[in-house]
Amino acid sequence: MSDKETMLVQKISDGTVIDHVSAGKSLSVLRLLSNPQNRGVTVALVMNVGSSKMGRKDIVKMEGVELTDEQVQKLALIAPLATVVTIRSFRVTQKKNAVPPKVVTGILNCTSTTCISVKEKESVQSIFSLAGSSPLSYKCKFCGRILSEQEISAQLG
Amino acid sequence: MSRDAWSGKDVLSILDFSRQDLEQLFAVADDFVERPDSVEKSLSDRIVATAFFEPSTRTRLSFSTAAIKLGAKVIDLSPEASSVMKGESLPDTIRMLESYSDLIVMRHPSEGAALLASEVGRVPIVNGGDGSQHHPSQAMLDLFTIKRLKGRIDGLRYAVLGDVRYARSATSFLYGLSKYSPRVVYLVSPEGLRIKSEVKATLDGFNLETQQVEDIEKVLDKVDVVYMTRIQKERFPDPNEYERVKGSYKITKSTLANAKDAIVMHPLPRTGELAYDVDSLPNAAYMEQARMGVPVRMALLHLVLGDRKR
Ligand SMILES: [Zn+2]
Image (cartoon, rainbow over all chains, first blue to last red; front, side, top):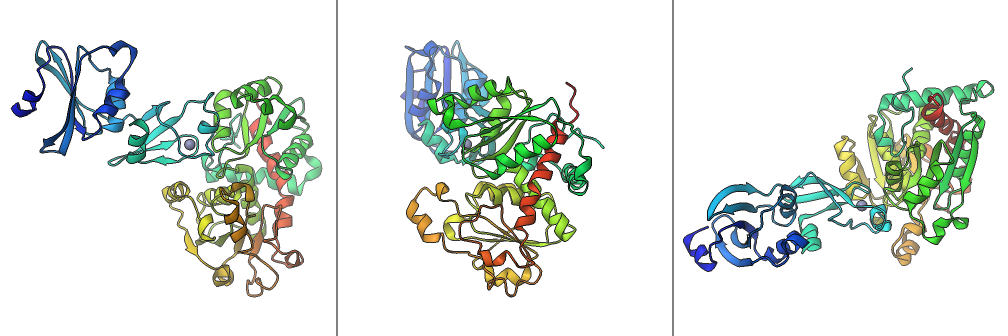
């Protein structure tokens, strides 16, 4: 982050900064990462700031929270370009790029109304496998239906 | 002969089988056709369950007949009378059925139902048709019929006519052809019934090229096999759309006037798209196709269950 950006939000001592979130997607990122453990943590959002790489981007800061590998993978579904920075005692200890998971279980919904994963929603978890990474697309294991990047974002937003 | 590809396996999609596996099936089926009196009761003491969550007469009866001819007993779940109608989940129904049987033949209106059943159950699942894509035993008997009548599957010119979008027999037939090297495959269907993009992508992955044409009359003199399908009302989201296209793509004796020695195939039942005056022509292959249903399904059941260790 540039100095200008850091001015927008106070530095955090321990926690996570998610940079290069697609503009407008930071609230979806928060929703996707929310779980009972991080209820009540301090969160800061920076929305629609200029980025040399992306034009416009969002930034998410979460205090006292570190993301698991699984969460970083999930994050890639709505913010495929995101960088996840782990901070301990005001120092960057780790930086990783969000990588779309090969298989996504139970998060996405098939858009075919005749797919068994939709018909038997209560007894079956949806399973999608990565079909393309740029743009992102996933394929339903049960019927072969492809979800586009826009459809994925819409479902998770 | 190795039975590894078949023995104890699920039969969910023809795509899961290699050309060699299919040839193995055809060899066994040929034997059942040619020497019906010397069929070994390889399924005696076995119980085959049929579970059809969607109406079907032909497929269910031909699987039942095939199983009985191999010495198996058949039990049938009729959904209307069972807990399925009271809202039992598919996984629970499959678990119940597999405790009574050695193999389950199922049909279901939803895509992926057989795959789901195969993940729940330990006994082999044979897909008798699910959703609009997979009907492997139909595709196997279709290819077998062509092989018997034309002597080969490779190098021929095919036209797939009618509902290429919702008819699972048409999609499965194309998936089956993708294991071979047809010279050309024409798809002839009205706009609302054209091939699904995910199906096209799968065929592309197997290097099976298809050509969309508007009118069957333009290609009838250029093909060896015409594969027709019924236009299925229940597959249409909009009934008006069905009314609009149901009469198109009809084959009659006069449309076949310049068809030379092309064979006409249809998985049956027909609903007006195939005229009865075609029945007496040498082109009509659908009766032979229907007759191959039992021997091919016998071969399938024999290879899957015939010599499994008990
Ligand atoms: Zn699906």
